[in-house]
Length: 122
Image 1 (spheres, rainbow, N blue to C red):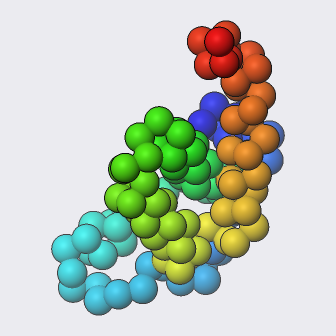
Image 2: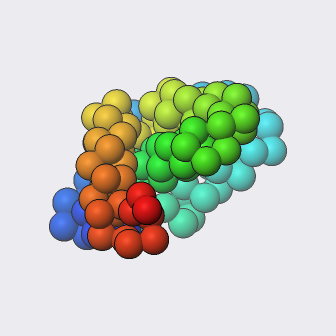
């Protein structure tokens, strides 16, 4: 997460919604859609979409779920896949943001295992 946040500082980008390419699909009369429209109007801050920190963190959670709580993979796996699809479908991120989030997790997981002695195999 911290690597993604640092990347946002040095590589600010604008997502599809802030570029006027449309918001999340759906009926504007639904409470969640109306709440999101209010947030976009009043609280949105430009920048911070590359890489997708949501995807990076979700990929790390999925990795550790598979590694240490294999039975929960049937619950966590579909949730992570849904999050990945939804971030692009709802236009919160471009596909490249998602791929960069997955790459960030893939690169940092082995690096973190080398840095953190508690995660090293005994």
